[in-house]
Image 1 (cartoon, rainbow, N blue to C red):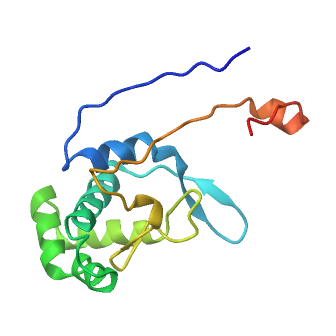
Image 2 (image 1 turned 90 degrees about the vertical axis):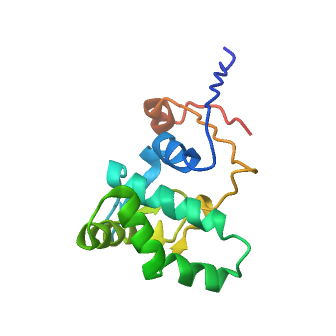
Image 3 (image 1 turned 180 degrees about the vertical axis):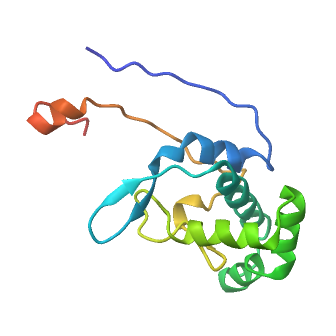
Length: 150
C-alpha cells in the first residue's frame, strides 16, 4: 500500500507565521528530567510569547548572535511583548521560566533561555522550513514489523 500525501497551504505573513508554525508542531515539545521524557504541548500564552521572540529574532537577524540574544533578552523587547499581549511583568517572567524547562524535539537545548532560541526555532520568513509528518503504527513498531522508509 502506497503512502498518501496530503498538502495544506496556509495563508500567512511575517508576523503570524511563527505562531502558526508553533501551533502545528506543538505536540513535539517536551519536559525532560532524570527519569523520563514527557511530551507537553505549549500553552496558548507560551505560543504567543515564543512566536514573538521568534519574530524579533528574525527581525534582528543582521545583528551578531551575541548582541541579538542580549537584545532579545532586553527590557525593551520584554516591554514590547508585554504591551503587544497585554500581560504583566510577572506573567511574562512565569512564561519565560516555563519555556526554559521545555525542549523542542530533537534539540537538546531549552526552547528559549536568556534570549537564545533553540536552533530549530530560528528561521527566516523568506526561507520557511518544510514540515513533514510521518505517522506509524506504534504497536507494529514495538513488534518489529515495520519497513524502513530510508
